[in-house]
Image (tube, rainbow over all chains, first blue to last red; front, side, top):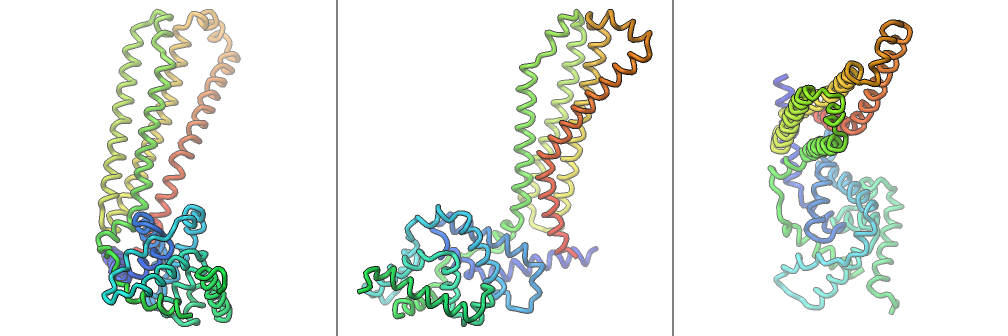
Length: 173
Length: 210
């Protein structure tokens, strides 16, 4: 019994420690899927709970971060679907958090702002893909994490690029 | 796509700009589910007491007892009512204590113990309420049977005829059983769902414990 208790608290400790170290993954997902501090915190907490629920099944044959990507994105997608209307209509304002660039370039800054706005208009699955892309994952990892084929991931990514172009430049000039 | 590359660069540059969540906050988050269930148990039990109190204001038995010219029973019943409120307030206090403990605990083992304790408290509470319902029915019947003038003339007839007596008692028993069943169902739905969720949470914790 004592060993069990020890193990349980140990497991909890290990979870909390790893999550604390990898929390930026979740923050970044929250940045894409939510708007405003409260929504960010809510999603962060929900993802944390889901990760903790799934943690017993995490066997450590992949990295904690890889596993966390999958569970966290699934949670974000599921929740996003439930509250689609309330989120989708809100303008993306999160951009101001990231204006800490030293070499301030007005034109680039404008472009980035538009880009963040455009990404925010993508749907739940597209956001997951673009997120993995921005995280610099290769197509194999994107496919594995999202549970689709590699070819499908490539096709989807191309479509997203097209969609982003269209959002940025609706007249196609 | 040029803009996308720009975005990617910016994205990776800004990883440290998030307000970091501490380990203690993460502990709190993963324990929050149980505490919200226990909070609902507390809220529902308080609402329930308010409901019963409101109902008892509408159905006042004092007038009936005065009509029967047995005012001395009023004080006995009052005593029983006060006792009942005392017990229920104690339960609410226990629910509150469980809630505070569960929402502040930091270790899994303690949380599991608290969950089991809360479940037991709720179960005792439900059985106490069901017992009280049966008891008040029996008291009601006895009072009506012994003192009500309408039944007075019937009383002798009933006691002389075992068949009639059996039927009357059968009907009374059935009435109690039906009410008992209805309230049992009510409690099962009301607290059963919460208890099941709490237990599911407990099992999850236990899985980790193994």
